[in-house]
Image (cartoon, rainbow, N blue to C red; front, side, top):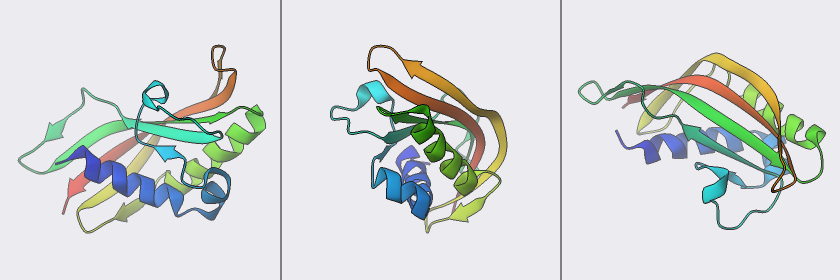
Length: 134
């Protein structure tokens, strides 16, 4: 299964939330913050963590999904975004024509971060995800 298909489905589901979209517009990226060339804040990024079971024969991936939100303004702004993303994804099932996704657990509730170098206020959380190829 191509991880890009999963990333696209996750991005589509998260941005379907009016609360998320009103704040982020489309600034939701399936990559590490350092890999983004142009950064306009606030933004959110996510990554399917590697090193977890991929069963290609059955077309499934079970892995943690880590999500970060970042603001130049305040923890409150980053917190509002992570809360909206959590309510959009946590314990949900959704699908596209290519993949079915189940978010089964919250592994790490939102934790506050501060990036000294970028002077960024942030939050991170981790969810457990199962993706099933359709």
